[in-house]
View (cartoon, rainbow, N blue to C red):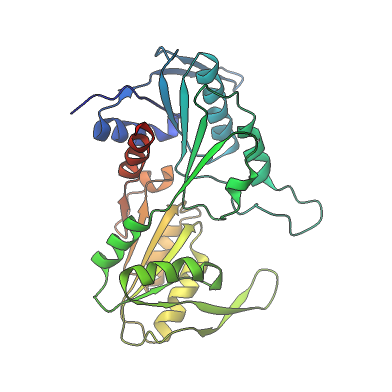
Length: 309
């Protein structure tokens, strides 16, 4: 395997992806010393020389602490002379706060984008790479000369769907909000698409009013870009089951699986299998019989090598 001159760094929670990317691409490993002082402050020291080098930093904004860890590392890598930097965000949090609904709400997705836009610029520019963002508009929040690439995990989803379900399955989503993306996936595979119409009963409760396609006797594969607690997913799966679906499977790019979501999904009795990428550490760490994890590492390697052309 040919060794690339790219140096791959990561935040602590994404070392699993750093290791896999290095193994797959033959890259150099970036070394960082990280400690936490008794008062909670974080100490970081970059041990690998980066002056004049092309560097990659992998990290997700899974919390405010992790977000600052990415920013601090990126800032230091640039200040210590990196020639170029690619920042990979396997999971970009705050994406559900991409606009203000109520007066006074903080649009966190935008404030984070502005924060990362403020990083000093390397001589070859700062590249930001995202995967299956919850909102298509987020890249437009970045300012200045930030170079943005929004990568779609379509092939992972298509391969998983074909592997899970019978040939004549229906590609579905939890509500009309993701209908366009699911329709695109369905067209790619030559199958029908379905989505659910909902009526809001109160601020926190909705009910299913109808389903857009016939699913009786068919396998149904539900795609959602992000699963948190699994509540919406379970309700949708029950609606498809009540409409006559044979077997129901779920694919998600970002499996956060908070509040014992996987146990709830399994306990619902209507979902056969959940497939998630390892974009979020919770998916990587979860060892649950209902869950199958696919890696983003091949897509990351592809993006790194693509930039070199």
